[in-house]
Amino acid sequence: MEYDENGVSIVPFELKKEIFEEARRDFRYEEYVRGCLNCGVCAGGCPPHRFFDFSPRIVLQKMKSKDPELIWTMMDEYVWACFQCFTCAMICPFLNSPGGVIAILREIAVRRGFESAKKVLKPYSRVLLKLTAYGNQLSPDMIQPDFFPDWGPHIGYASTDLAVKRKAIPMPTLQVTNLAWDVAPEAMKELYDIFDEAGVFKIIESVDPSLYEIIQDIVDDVRSS
Amino acid sequence: MAENILVIGGGPAGLNAATMLSELGVKVTLAERDSFLGGNPKKFKYKFLFPDMQPADDVIGKLIKKAETNSNIKVYLSSEVSDFKENGKKFDATIKSPDGNETKTFDSVIVATGFEHFDPARDAKYSYQLFDDVIDIKDLERMMGEGNFVRPSNGQPPKNVAFILCVGSRDRHVGNQYCSRVCCTVSVKQAIELREHFPDCEVYIFYMDIRTYGFFEDLYWKAMEEYDVQIVKGRVAEITSGENNTVICKGEDTLLRGPFEIPFDMVVLASGMEGGPQSSEMAKKLGLELDEHGFLKPQNVTLAPFKSNKEGVFLAGACTGPKAISDSITEGGAAAMDAYIYAVKNH
Image (tube, rainbow over all chains, first blue to last red; front, side, top):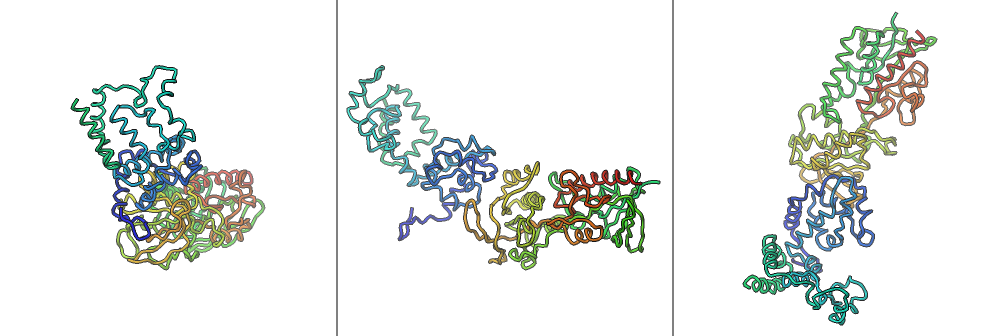
């Protein structure tokens, strides 16, 4: 992305229009975006609306407008404020889904490797690495103060002496800190096929190229085993 | 001998009242100021009626045909009630028409003198009559009726069109505080028609509240969901001329964008309904009460909506307030019943 002398990004209108059209073309668009009375019941039920400058009503209205500029204003930080709880979709008298619109826009941001997507997804690169290397989503050794700061004030304590704490769990575990369970290589290979087909590897490549390289090495190893 | 009832006004309400009374065997005198029957729908060549897009000519045409072919109805065109006097429980009225003056005694009277379209030129901020491409809903309805959808300034199809609601309604500046009830639905209907006719034309509606009451709401949802009409909340404060022969609407989108200035090829003003000079004229001539909005006042708006303050004189249609054509037709029938009861009792 280009920036002017004040550090404000210069985005050509053509790109904004492309994103707008990409969102409108999405196969879910017709289902998610219908009429709207601006009643605000979606925002009334929206958890982040209470704490951030975020409103599902605005999301839907901007999506309904024919103005690519309005969609563009949401592509940076705005779309990441949504909790994806879909209270808005449950409550809307028109059966709109502002949360669904957010999902469409987030996917565009991820596919196109937008800075905001990279920033938000950074903590999840570890999850992806764990997932592709071991078929696990989370394991004890991933609990570190630098990541997942939103896990609360005791994250520092929780991340120390993991091996001892692991052994203190009164139920059978693998007694290791880098795994939650064992996954068979056949299952891993199947998972990679699914990732290939679904374009997950491509997305990882655009959001985090160095992570992608590491993951590719692991994938090649498992596949050739 | 049959009862004699005078119906003043040959629009939807008056026509239905006259027809129903005639079918009861009443001798009806129907006085119409214009040289034709049908009222405003005929005068301004309404094309399709909401909510089901019936051709207006079919609806009004049927009413006119019934009135014209019934031997119990005597129609006076280009006429007026020049003199009106109470005669006991009855009324002596003189009908002045091109054929001369005729005075008759009537058992009861129905006033169905209707409304006038608000003249948007009275509200200068909309620049009506200043720019050719600023028209109002009755103009567009007539243009559509004539199969002429194009921009008045250059005869080209419009690329984008704005509807502005509440023109002449809900505005103390023009002296009308009330809502005209039908303009929202008419505008939404016309927006759909425009989108059907020009699928590439963007249509905006600027509104304060959308009042597509009852089942008319279906049209509003359809406009949003099937025709992608842009619905923007905010009153347009000013219309000026823009580049490339456009007209610029300036206002505030109070829910989304904030201040806006958008150039349009065409602006359609949803002008409302007024009691018109005929309401005060009737009030004066027949001794009826006028309400604070300039319409004729019913005796009791809930219990006796078709009775006037004067015994034996009944009210029907838009002369008592803004109304849809279907409501006026209904009221014509209801007032006919009231007028018939009074006539039979005092005959």
